[in-house]
Length: 499
Figure (cartoon, one colour):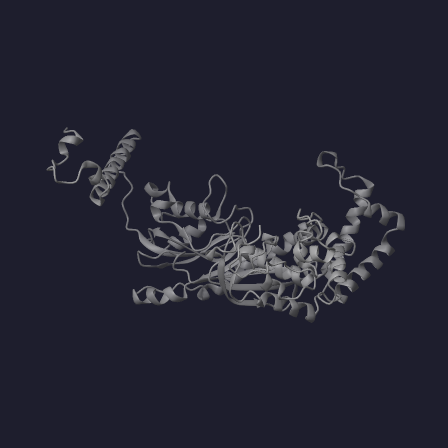
C-alpha cells in the first residue's frame, strides 16, 4: 500500500506549503473522513473478535430529531445533567432509550452521538414537572413511548415527544422558563428573641430609628410559645436547655437526659410553627418583596462568580405569582406556592431570590431592600433549601411559530397538564411535604441564619466616629437585614463593586 506521502499531491513553488494546507478546511474534512473510516474498521475488527458477522449485525434504522417532554422527582439524584458515576436523571433516560430500542447499541456508549441536549439543568434534589431534551431517536415503533416509560423508574416519566427540524436545540430555542417554589408560611415568623440576628436588628433600630417597624405578629407567636414552654418545663429545665451545647459527633449520646429535654423543647416549637397561619398583611409584604424582581435587573448578588460589571448578570423576570395559603399533610402545615417566569436564570438564582424575599419579610425590612441588592455592593445572600424548588416547564413561545411553519407540532405542555398535576402531587409535592415534616428543613435553615453571628472581618478606620463606621462598613454578614441596610458605594453605577 502506498505511503501517505505518495498520495500527497505535488505543489509548484508558488503554491501554499504543507503547513498552510493543514490549516485549510479541505484537510480537516479529509482527516474527519479518514478517522470515520478507521473507526468503522475498528468496529468491524471488534465485532469479528466477538464472533459477530454481517448477518447478525444490528440493522440500521432511521433516526429522527425529536423534543422529548419529561417530568421527574429529583430526590436521590445528583441533578439533571449526565455526570458519571453519580446517578442523574439523564443517565436514567439514556439507559431507558437504549433498552427500549430508541437508541441503537452502536450509539449506546456516548450521549453526544445522539446529539443529547437539555433545556434546563437542575441541581441535586431539584424536581421538574416538565423539562425538554432534544436528540435523535429511532421512533418507528408505535409503542416506543410505552417501552421507554416501562424502563424508567416511577419517579421519572416521558410525557411525549415531538418531531422537530434538524437545527432545533432545546436550550438555545427556549424563550423562557417557569419555576415553582413551595414555602411553608412559618418561614415568615421573625427571628427568635435572643438570637444573634434578633439582637442585631434591635440594636440597629436604636441606631437608625423608623426604618424597621415593630413586628407584632411575630412577637405574639413567640410570646405564646414561651408561655407554653413555661407550662411544659420547669425553670431549671429551661435553664439547662438554654445552656446546652451539642458535643462532638464522636461523643454524642442520644440517651443524654439534657439532649432529650432539648429534643422535647424543639418538638414543642415545631408544633407551634406548624399551627402558625400567616396574616394577610404579612403575605402582602412578601408579595411586594417578590414584585421587586420583575423586569430586567443586575442579579450579580444572586449567583456565584459574577461581578457587578458582568453584563451576563442582567436577567429579565417576566411574571411572578404568589398563591393564597393552603394547608396540607397530616401535620396541617400551611404553605404558599411561588411561580417565577423568567427568560433565563443563573446558578442558585431562584433559591437566592426566594431566600432574600423571605428574609426581608420576616425581618420587616422595606421591600426596596431587594432593589438595593442590584447595586455594586457585594452581599452574602444564603440559598433557600433545594427541597421546595421545581422546574414547572420551559416555554417555546417564539420557536413554536417556526416549528409550525416547518410542518411540526408545537412544543406545549398544556395537553399533558392533568397527567403532570397527578404526577407532581404523588411524586413531588407529597415528597416535599413529607421530607419537611421528617427533617424540618426550613426550620433548620432559618434557625441557622438567626443564630449565625460571624462578622465580616471589616474593621473601622482609626479616628472614625461610631455613626461613620456604621455608615461605611457592614458589621455582620446579615447586616443588610437590619435597619442599617445595604451600604452601596456613593459613586456612580459604573463603579467597581466592593469585594
